[in-house]
Image 1 (cartoon, rainbow, N blue to C red):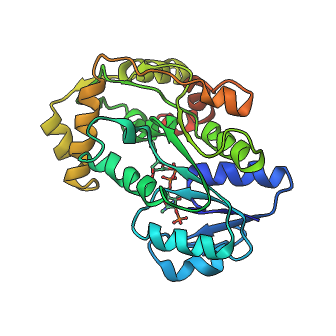
Image 2 (cartoon, protein in one colour; image 1 turned 180 degrees about the vertical axis):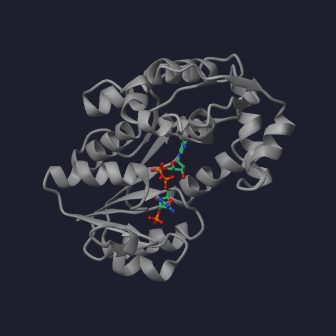
Length: 276
Ligand SMILES: NC(=O)c1ccc[n+]([C@@H]2O[C@H](COP(=O)([O-])OP(=O)(O)OC[C@H]3O[C@@H](n4cnc5c(N)ncnc54)[C@H](OP(=O)(O)O)[C@@H]3O)[C@@H](O)[C@H]2O)c1
């Protein structure tokens, strides 16, 4: 039995489909199991009392990077006889400021929590998710400019289905296990290039407003903790004008090339459709 934690998540949802299509026995765990259809098992990574039941009869786990109770999770997984954990971490853990940047550190703490685990641990380190473009959708739908502090920062947008496909391959085949894999999309694109591409696909130009980091921080203050906003701004400043090195891991592990950002936008073009 394979346990997928964080069952409502995008990658978890894609992975669930891939494993079920293949006929694998899967248990979906979620902090809000009733919100899934069919209802999932209770597995709240912030509540260790839920771990033992979620892990009963489980041999491998897809784990979101939540370090809050990672040692309790390892103990419960060991007691359950789990022999492989695939952790969804982040390429930010490889950055020079990984121990101080809050975005990176949250993932690094989860990786470190698994470092001495007795089972095989495979760490996925994706860069930027293609789905981060959803953050621009409201402005684009409303016909407003997208405010960017670093319009020329590069990213490596990866389709979430490719991350799920890598996890699927690792959970179902013995190759490539037991190490870290940096995962990227097939192209490195600046935010400006990503927005131009969205504009081409929705057939409506997208305007960009180059704002100061302080203005952007104020814009997100209501829904993003300040230290997290600082972490993102520091990261984008480092990526400004610097193309992201690309990885061929998606193709090596899954046997198919990584899906381009344009495919993600085509699949989600309704999210950017103009409001009437
Ligand atoms: N975005 C990036 O560019 C990026 C880059 C590198 C790594 N990552 C990693 O990938 C993770 C995001 O993966 P993802 O996109 O698959 O996850 P997601 O859709 O952002 O969901 C993350 C988790 O949040 C919980 N959740 C709470 N409320 C939810 C709701 N209304 N809808 C859906 N899920 C909800 C779910 O766990 P429960 O079902 O248990 O509540 C879910 O697994 C990040 O947290 C980060 O660790 C992201």
